[in-house]
Length: 405
Image (cartoon, one colour):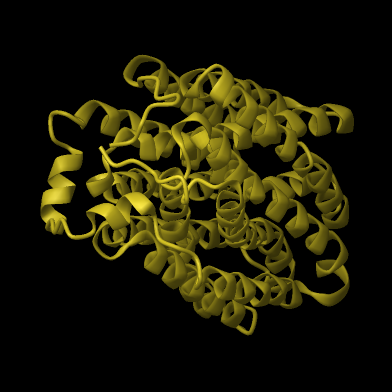
């Protein structure tokens, strides 16, 4: 079992790692967050149908599925740091160019490449951080890494509220892409994972790594991860990419919906911070199951809410519990596998989850087109999340403060 040297676990190095990795995570979140507002703006600018709006979100998730699978596998071959840099570069360039498009087809193609960068970076980043901090605080640090996602969403909501109505969605997209290049600059001097560096001379084929993920020893945790990743991503992208548009459907103006979503987004930060505290105090399973159940209940209430107060309260709890669960999931996933297949296992689970991210937005678009109410749609997401919670409760094992192999 590889151990982490004192040098690699020094607080200043750990804080720098968290800051550099988190900054890239923040810009990723800004892009995904702004996309939900951009979809609503494109609906007005390009007269998109609900089905076309659904496809924008789904193509983004198709790219994320491909990126998580491909880059997760190669992270075990060439290192976490190299993939970390490549994925952010791909995301930045594709996102910037997408701001210049004039047709839906070109926009969708570029969103695929943006998704590839996003999908590849997130599981690789959590793997790198997991392997670079000691077991006693690994879960907390990874959840704190995930909390940069909430900060990114908050900035996205602010940009969307103040920039899109006055300056348009193109400026908003450029504002997410350009700063990401600065994060790329910072990342070049980042050291690779000490655990990967210790085992980088152990050459294994890609096919062997994929087979090992589904071998008898890891079959149960793999099945658990695939179920929970699918249900969480399916519900998250189905609900949050459509959140501004759902608010419009409930009778609010576009600017009102942006403002209300901004208020809901603020609840993500305490969701992360509470999960970061509880994950080392009580454990991964408790946080995941509890926060997923809270997400399911909030989704059900939100779908049936009729007043502004109820919508805001349910939306805030939805953000609180859902993003806290995301943080726990990113901490929990890399802990299921040894170093030699950690990137592959985590990437494959995330990739399968992104299939849910493809289907979620499409489901919302098709059900709205067919005349189903928002309450039915959020009821489906409620059931999905409960299935994920059950998978963790019955198939998962506690990994709190467990030393990584």
